[in-house]
Image 1 (tube, rainbow, N blue to C red):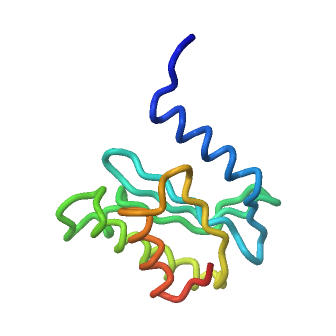
Image 2: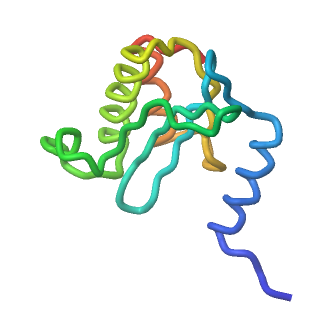
Length: 121
């Protein structure tokens, strides 16, 4: 029997979370993903299957001025920018989807920055 890797286990945890979480047009799902090199956030309406807003460290305007693209400092910047973009689209309340990652470090920093910028979840 093949053993499961860390990434396999994260996918299983994310699937388990997604059974309970779903985004609507009024309260979209704020999906967070981080790889070894970047951090990504999307605001998703699951009923329509559309991404309403997004932000990541791949974008040049976010990446400029950062020491690294996948650390807590970068997560704070992405969380703030993502919240500003969501508020500009009229999104004030979201359902937080941590993507199978533990709620500490980068994920927690991103969530706290989004809350400080005005999002409710």
